[in-house]
Length: 209
Image (cartoon, rainbow, N blue to C red):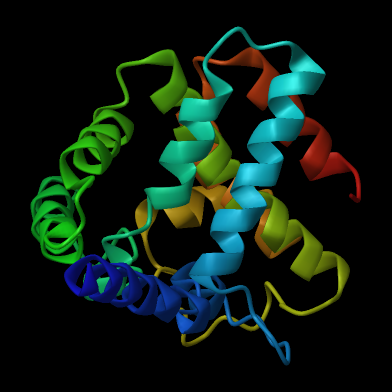
């Protein structure tokens, strides 16, 4: 019994680190605010966003699985941190993420089930995984929009931004007035297989939340 208790507490302690892990994208874009969103706050936000979109747009999928996926989809960041797209390529991130989650889950009795759900999320072949992925990306765009509305970031003062000279970012900057415009356009192609998400980001770009 003590082993089960110790494993439970150890897992919680590891996950608790995400409360203090600040989202890298907001740091990259120089958000100036007393409190910037943590990974744990992102997890909560994207779960609530998924519930809202699921009900508002009448999706026919297993929303319980989606919420499960989103609850665990950032576990790897406990060990490898929140890596930006320019810091590691997708395949390497998948491999490093798998190693990290295997370590984090090694003492949890449900590790096989959790690993299976994580693999499904990362492979993005099921309706639930694709929907969860879209919500994950959209939550970042929406949070950046909220920071823009608070005047927490300035698109004209990004001299130390490590992605400012990225070819794709430069393209997105061409018709951008705010940082959130860049984020929305950078992520736009990720939503191309779902018209509802395209409509949401189009509205988001033109209107305040």
